[in-house]
Image (cartoon, rainbow, N blue to C red):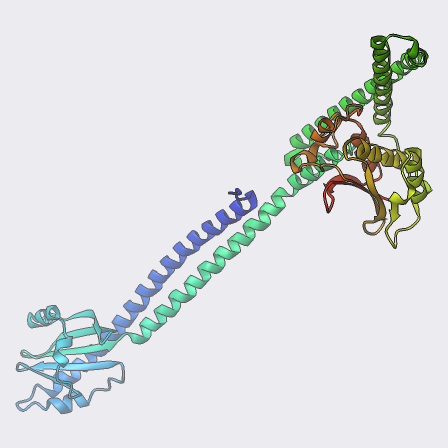
Amino acid sequence: MKPIGLRARVSAAFAVGALLLSACVSLVSYELIRNTLFAERERTAVRAAYFDATVVNAGVTGPVPDVSEALSALDTGADRFVLLHLGGEWYSRTAEPAAGTAIPAGLQEMLGRGEAGAQRIQRDTVPALVVGIPLSGSAAFYEIVSLQELDRTLQLLALVLTAVAIMVAAGGAAVGWYVTRYALRPLTVVAGAAREVAAGDLGTRLDPDTEPDLAGLSHAFNHMADQLARRLEKDRRFAADVSHELRSPLQTLEAAVSVVHRRKDGLDERSAAAVTLIAAEVTRFQSLVEDLLELARSDQPVHREQIDVTELARAVCRSRGLPEDLVTRVPGTPEIWRVDRRRIEQTLANLIDNAIRYGGGPIAIRLGTAGEGRCFLEVDDEGPGVAEEHRPMIFDRFVRGPAANARGGGDGTGLGLSIVAGHAAAHDGSATVLDRPGGGARFRVELTA
């Protein structure tokens, strides 16, 4: 399972924190508003109930009380319902038979002791408030006040506060995303600089003054880049010095071996075989020295000039006894490229030699365009191809794939493809290996031309 990124974790933390904070604020606000509204509604209902109770009490205190007239004199509206308990009977303004059942028994007992009270109930699934006031004698007055509108208001308030909490959480996530993007921007610069160094630009450095909080990291990165550049320069000089020192004795050795090799027919069988082996190894050793020299000067600037690369590729084929018709130019590809002739010639030569040694020989060499200002070279072979796991390292120095051992190509130096990658990078390009349709390998070099 792929781990969650730092930006996503920080954004989630901001969102959760904002949600918890907004939820707490919303809950506290809801309770305060709810209690305030209920308290105000109860005060209003109690005042109205006492006023109505006074009117009813005045109408039922005579010798012949007219309960209906007393109740009809009340202006209760649509949200209030009044009941009168007198002489063991229940009276109301409507003909509702079970009106008395809406009054809680506890509230009735309280009024039986001469105490006024109020209690919230559910009347036909609608919240309501019952206010009970004792009257003269044993009479008791009850007023049921509907709280439906207040309940709807509180539901709307809860919905609004929930929406606000969700929006605050989303805002927290957005703030977290922005903050991490801003905070990680210096690290993005460091990552970009590291990629440039890995791509071969050893002059890349970071400015410590850009982000003072990361000045230590910038200094450490610059020191690492300096040390790496010095190490690579030391290695390059060492390879160049060793190669130069070896060329003279190698030339002398090659001349001496060639003299003996020309006279091997006069030697016995074992001596002739030994001379042939020595001559082959001297030739291979000389190729290795030449490749090392080429690697040592691979960091030199590219000398670009107008080159007919198609004709250059055909010339390389002729020098190796290959037919010129192997070279094809994709329609629309310019004939003249502005490249370094020596580097492109060696790139083609190394790819063709690699196909001859390990791929059964080249079967196609293509030249084409790879976008605005970019061109490519492709060399196809009919060998076993390159396994996926070996492709990332096949362009490294002294790396030889399984095909080199399987096909017995023991005369390679292991530097040819590394030189190809170096020449491609010098032209602001890259070297890759792919599967050829139908089997085999396809080596592709893209470059700026």
